[in-house]
Length: 332
Image 1 (cartoon, rainbow, N blue to C red):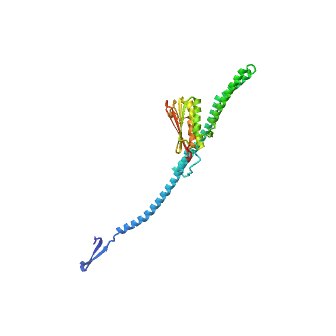
Image 2 (tube, rainbow, N blue to C red):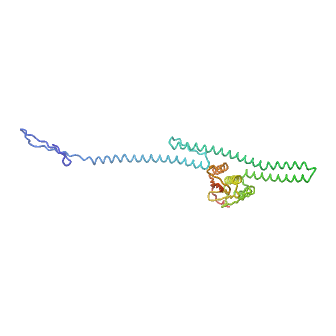
Image 3 (cartoon, one colour):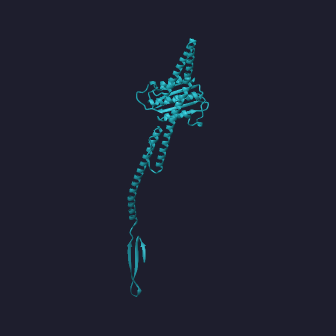
């Protein structure tokens, strides 16, 4: 007979005597070992030795994975900043086959396409400038030269018969020549604003606005705030943009009044050209036409941008923002 009593196994075995009678019993006891505590200790120690290395390896793997991703994304961010400044020579070199590597290659392809597009637009801008210069020569100087030749021919025919009339024709020819010279000087200034005649952007723009107002017969106001020296390439770009914006006002707006503001602030120079003309609906022409595209391209090369606000019957306002490096002692 076996029984579990108090954590021990008790075994009772009868001892038979003569004639099959029970002469006695043999009692045996066997204590059961407590396996729970040793098992828990063993499992705990195993868990410690397995968990700590696993956690360390997991943290190490996560660190290197995150570091790699951060480094790759950082390269993308640096390239994007260069592209935003118009520098498309920077590319992201990522040959990985994962999604980030594929994105890098697609962005490189996009940057190359944008660079080609900007180059094509730059060539178109140069061609447009040449065509505009040719039109201006044809409409002004060429006609004046032709009229001058007629006056000289008339004077030659009359020089022996009617000296007074011949002198009158020569005087008119002389006046036409002076007008042609004035027109040529104006065209040369438009084609070569780089030096700005050493006057600085504000002075050159003020004089140009006065001349433009007289020629276009549109009243114009020019204001400047916080004038200071800025890099020549910035002055050159903004002068060109002001010319283009005012040319658009004269050609398309039907305005009676225009305003030009040049605002210098910390790290930024703002050019604003506004008119009270007929305006337009920007949603119908998101690009704003070739003139506005040319303005945007000039500013993109310098890290700037253009905002255009217009509505039918409410005029147009063009705002150009260009970052400039601050230098001490440059306030005027």
